[in-house]
Each structure stands twice: as structure tokens, then as C-alpha cells.
Amino acid sequence: MHVVAIYNNKGGEGKSTVTVGLAEFLAANRGKKVLVIDLDAQASSSCALLGHKSLNAAIDEGRTVVELAAYLRRSRRPIVECSKYLTWRAGAEARGAALEEIALLVPDGDRMFDVEDSMRWGQHNHLFLEHLKPALTEFDFVLIDLPSNVTKASMISVNGLAMADFVVVPTRSTHISLNGLPRTFSLIDQVRDVSGTGRPAVLGFLLNATNKTHQQYRSIVKPVVEASTDGSLPPFFKNHWTPSPALEAATDEDRDARTLKERFGAGYDRARLVARELETACDKFEFQPVKPVSRSIWERLGLA
Ligand SMILES: Nc1ncnc2c1ncn2[C@@H]1O[C@H](COP(=O)(O)OP(=O)(O)OP(=O)(O)O)[C@@H](O)[C@H]1O
Ligand SMILES: [Mg+2]
Image 1 (cartoon, protein in one colour):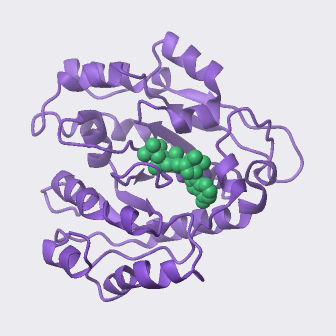
Image 2 (tube, rainbow, N blue to C red; image 1 turned 180 degrees about the horizontal axis):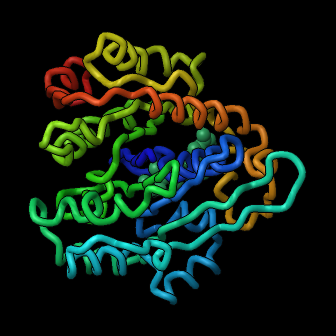
Image 3 (cartoon, rainbow, N blue to C red; image 1 turned 60 degrees about the horizontal axis):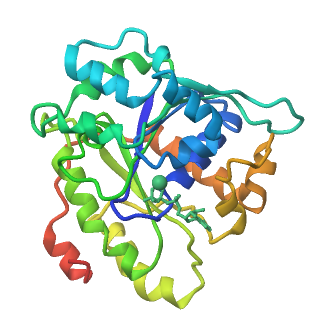
């Protein structure tokens, strides 16, 4: 099992869209058993995968991350049977690469913040790591869609990051986007398990909505790519997502897509290649203690 958090502290970089793309391709194209944990009160990835009706039903029936976090906060005992908190998006009947079943753990709006109020940094960081992660071994991939603007008070998100083996950082290739990276790394570095397992490790930056032939890519992103090539920063995924109306529409909940082709249209190849690259990178990754990215590196890149 690989637990992968999709996180960039800046909003709108593509976290939810990438989460949905990875989930659908890992399930339908790579034959993986996938769970999506949506920790954003906005519920973008839950809506995209389930639709509003099923999301609201899950909330009404108390199958959300809020109930789960509240249980762990109270009992500090392992989850034995996690299925009562999960909702399944059924697979589709169709020729070709039909959409496959995906499990979801959905958020519950503002109630997320109520539970977080009762949790404390340093005291409750590892509830998910210790008591939820061991109950998820039936899944090949657990993808965690994080919100933006996470702080040390966002204890559900902190728990999500702390239970992750890997973080994927989607980023657009504008200066404003890259400016969000130091803050993103600062939280990952603070959450990283101090026991020296190196988790969560930043698996890589995933360029989203990027056209590599544009001058903007050459002048803005290249220096950051170079810093990652010399080991100062984690690597970039070799594959990336282009700006694409098809990828933009892939999270529309009212699309009646039954296959990967119907859902991702012209974005199919991009999404497939990135999912494949993620799978390989997770499988071959060797964990080792990680040094936080030093401020001087961000300063050298003009991002701090
Ligand atoms: N490659 C792309 N091409 C075109 N549009 C895209 C692409 N990736 C994402 N988008 C669009 O950009 C917007 C932001 O994407 P998304 O919601 O996935 O970002 P996010 O990081 O999850 O945002 P938030 O921080 O609000 O959770 C959405 O409207 C989405 O459809
Ligand atoms: Mg999102």
C-alpha cells in the first residue's frame, strides 16, 4: 500500500483534479484498489467522483472523516472496520477502459473545523498514522486530497500529511504559483515523522496546466527544475499536465462518463502517463532521512 498526499498550500494548483485523475487511472488502467481521502471542506474530489447526491447521503448517514476523526480523538483506539466510514463509487459497465470502483472517505463542511478545534498540534498529529493507516492495507493506493491554506491548527490535514508515505506537489508554472512552494515545504518538513523514517517524502513536483514551449516555462520554471536536478530540491515528474479544457472538465460531476476516454477526453494520455509514473516512482522509492529544504535555496530561486 502507498499513501500519497496531493498537497500544495496554494489554492487552485490542481490538487483535486490531479487526485481524481490519479484515482481513476490507477483503478481502471492499472488495476489498483484505490481509496480517496478528501480532507478539503470544499469536497471537490468527492463531488467529482460521487456527485452531490451521494456525497450528501454519506454526510447524512455519518460516513465522513469528521466522524472518524472524532472517534479516534475520543478513543485513541485503532479503527478495526474502516468500511463503515467509506462510500463506494461503483464501476461502470462499458467496453474499453470502463471506470472502476473507487472508495471514498468524504469531508463534512464546517464540521471539519469543529473537530479540529478539539485537536492539538504535537498531541494529536498521529491519530490517523497510528490508528487509521493500519486498517487500510486492503488498498493499493490511498490518495489524500488536501485543502489549501493548511496551518498547524488544521489538525485533520496535519493528520493526513503525517500518515502519508509520499507527497505529490502539483504546481502551475507561474511565478505566483512557485511562490507558494516555501510555505508548502515548511509544513511538510514540520509534519515529517521525526523518528527518521523519512515519511512523508516529497515524491515530486507535478507541473500542471503547463506548456513547456512557452517562454514563461523557460524563464520561470527552468531554474527550479535545475535546483531539483542538482539535488537541492525533490525531482519533477518527467510527465506533466498541459492546460486542457478536457482536464478542466474531468471533474464535472454531471458528466455521465463511463470510461476513462469519456471522462478525460484529450487529457487521457497526460493523465495516464502521470499515473503510471507515480506508480513506478512509489514502487522503487528508497526512504531515507530527509533534510528540510533550506531557506537559502528558496532565496537563491527568488521565491523567499
Ligand atoms: N490541466 C488543467 N487544465 C485546465 N484547467 C485545469 C487544469 N488543472 C486544473 N484545472 C482547473 O483549475 C481549477 C483549480 O483546480 P483544482 O480545483 O483541482 O485545484 P486545487 O488545488 O484542488 O484547488 P483548491 O486549493 O481550491 O482545493 C479548476 O477549475 C480545474 O478544473
Ligand atoms: Mg482542491
